[in-house]
Structures are given as C-alpha cells and as structure tokens.
Figure 1 (cartoon, one colour):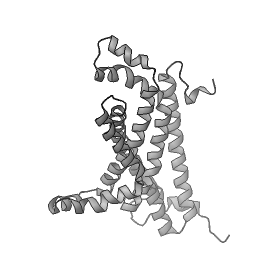
Figure 2: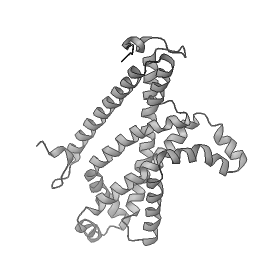
Figure 3: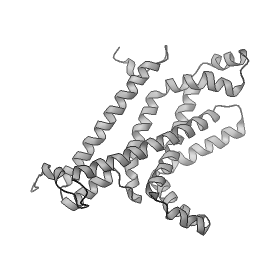
Figure 4: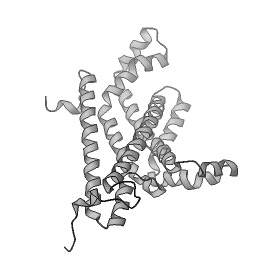
Length: 247
C-alpha cells in the first residue's frame, strides 16, 4: 500500500487559518454534541408525551399518537432532513420561506428539528413499553388513592417507567449522536463533516477518519458509563437492568 502516514498532520495549520486540524475536529465535536443534546431534549419531551398518550384509554388520542410514531419512525432520517431543509421553505408563504432560508445556522436548526422528531418517535415506543410493563395494580393504586388519571401518570406510572427504560433510552441517545453525522448533507460542519474536510485538504484520509472514530468511541464510552451509574442509582428492585449482569 503506497500511502504516506502523517500523524503530525493534526498539529499543522488548517486552511481556514484559525487553528490546527485538531482544532477543526474539536470544532466539529462541539457541533455534534450541541446538535445531539438539544435534539435529545426535544425528543425526550415529545417522546414522553406521545408515549404516554399511546397508553391512555382515549382511542382517538391513541390513534393520533400511533400515527405520529409511524410517520416519523418509518421515513428515513435523510429524507426527513431534506424535507425540512429544502422542501418546507417552498411550501410556506414566500416571505416566511425566505426568512427560514436566511436564518443563521439554518443547517444546525434543521438538524436539531429533524433528529428531534425522528428520535421522539423511537423514545415514545420505549416509554409506552415501559408503562405497559408495569403491573396493572400500579394504576389501580392511584385510583384507590383518589388520584386523577394525569396525576396517576405523573406521580406513579411515569417515574417507574422511566427508571425501567433507562437502558434503551441510552441506546437512543447514542443513536442520536451517530445520526447527527447525516446533517453533513445539509451543510452542518459536525465531526464527520470536519473529518471529511480535513482529508480533502490534506489528503490524509486515514488519519482524519481514524481520529473521528476515536472521538466517537470516547464520547460513547463516557455516555454509557454515566448512564450505567444513573441506572444503578435509580434501579427498581425486582426488575432486570442492564447493569445487573455482573452482580
């Protein structure tokens, strides 16, 4: 293989003249984390609401929530991102569409919205599964205490359900981190986009993507260990948890 390895490339000045190639990758990591974290907050809130609605006795609300899940879960993320970024500004009134196109950091905003809706559908399924896994007596206990249905969900069902579904929610958060790389297709300079830019200017393709891979792995290791710690602290006695295998 006729390839000239150069691991010192990370400390050489980048073409933008602002810093080194390592600074470029760290800038990409910043946008990856910012996109993933804000989209995750959006997904968690929407997913909790939609997932809760799917377990209520109101059939019309359940149908709407199921429709939401099927819509955003089954359309590929790349297609959703293109729809929000390229198509949506053309469907709204011209003045509003022009305003959307001129928004600062519009790729970032679009990526957050797309990832938020896409992941919220998956979170909703996990929340629904967590609520449905609880014994029926939990809801009956709330009724016996004189709680309304919303109060029963707020004080009894949802706190228990979220403690149970921490492992799958951890997987969804890791997925949102990885899925943020799709945003390079609409111009967001996140970590993968920065690595690609580095290899295009320096022609050191292996070094660029090896560094990006290591950064992704390190972030994932930190997230997994943090969530395992939280899971152990809030684990519900009598329920299987992902961190109980070594005990």
